[in-house]
Image (cartoon, rainbow, N blue to C red):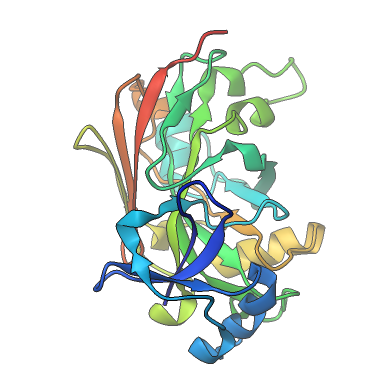
Length: 284
């Protein structure tokens, strides 16, 4: 099942079931937390109460599939080749996780804002897990995942390096620039994938040229391990999302950063694609 968060004619956001074959969305009644836990437990369509007739998919704007009350968690340094090729570093002994501001998110077709403080805007395609359960079962973390979506964890690399000596990277400045990070186009529920942490092809293209091409199966720590690690430190709630890291091929490693006018397409096998165009550099 595909679940999207939408708006129509700029109205109030709503959740909907997406039928890509019929090019339709059917609104769901209630907030995410009202129905997601039952859907996560495997109740299927009976967990949902529809709120109106289907409408054309192309009549709605696809929003990031997360409500404003929820958290955006980021797991970093989770692909060994990325760490070696793009940062010249070895993998760490445990995952790294931090928060991204909700205001950084954009939908599947929204423009990527080019912030005035950076000149090294970078791309990072990622598999994103969406927590559906009210509470994570740490013995079986994947049972708490409703499904997966696509992320492009756009980063300002020069700001990332700007942290004071002895303090380390400035991940807040690098990762939370307003209206930069793609998320969507929808959530594909966990039952659409084989059991276990997904092994899916991740690709990112800039103006049609492939920059990143890898598999989520190459993660150092899989989805279950990441969910457990984060939840042990700060409990997940239904609707929170977890970016699971990006593979090699980022601009930080190649020196090829994003420019105004670039069309960036981030895709995950079995889920879909984000297609975002980089805006002009915003004046300071």
